[in-house]
Length: 259
Ligand SMILES: NC(=O)c1ccc[n+]([C@@H]2O[C@H](COP(=O)([O-])OP(=O)(O)OC[C@H]3O[C@@H](n4cnc5c(N)ncnc54)[C@H](OP(=O)(O)O)[C@@H]3O)[C@@H](O)[C@H]2O)c1
Image 1 (cartoon, rainbow, N blue to C red):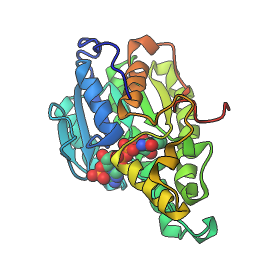
Image 2 (cartoon, helix red, strand yellow; image 1 turned 45 degrees about the vertical axis):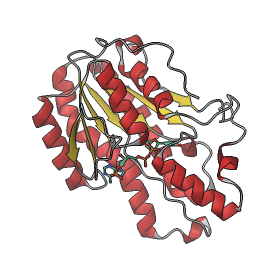
Image 3 (cartoon, rainbow, N blue to C red; image 1 turned 90 degrees about the vertical axis):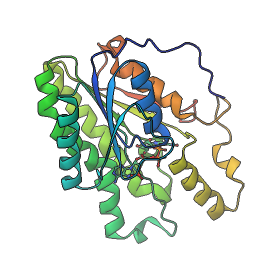
Image 4 (spheres, helix red, strand yellow; image 1 turned 90 degrees about the horizontal axis):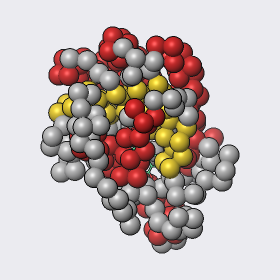
């Protein structure tokens, strides 16, 4: 069970403007809430809000799976905030394909790349002029996945897209460091969220094992809580990490082998 050890400093992100994609539920909603708790002004997007969507954030309905959707969202978010200091590329969807990697249809590969990789590239491209205008101190946090490093075959396309996101983030970190803009990646392990729970249920059904078996054996003894990832985002987005860029931070209870 997630333990809250201390209250967030409510002034840590005071005056900061944050844009988080996929903040309607799960990890994204926890990230939005954590940035709000630190005093940031936050805009988020998804195709639909849910009961989990933090009320104190501005929710703009949108689809970051297409270039046009990203451009419409970015323009609306910048109009709302007047600029941006923190960008969290979190929106994604893993869709398992049972039946062999070579049978994944071309459209599923393209969808996986559009949503799980190119959405982050497109959101970043659309927001970069505003990040540069805000001056040194800007931060981009890209939410990747353990599937980028140890992809299960039914998630080969999702894992490949997330691996591309890792490589892109490294290159971007090098390019933007002279401007004082930091770029980091988080690699979550098995975190209990609506999206991931559905995928795990698929796997459990396909393998004919109980759902709990899909999160068994995590060295730290439990699956992740969305707030585990949100805390890591808060650290990487804050001045506490002002000398940290280009890293991939694995947050997974010790599940991935050391790489
Ligand atoms: N949970 C895990 O175990 C786990 C593990 C490794 C990595 N991750 C990564 O962590 C991030 C969050 O995952 P999660 O488990 O919290 O997933 P989730 O519960 O499915 O939430 C995904 C969020 O992204 C939004 N989204 C999906 N497609 C979108 C689109 N086309 N346009 C705009 N928003 C879209 C969803 O809202 P709508 O569907 O309404 O659009 C929702 O807000 C993802 O990057 C995921 O790859 C999660």
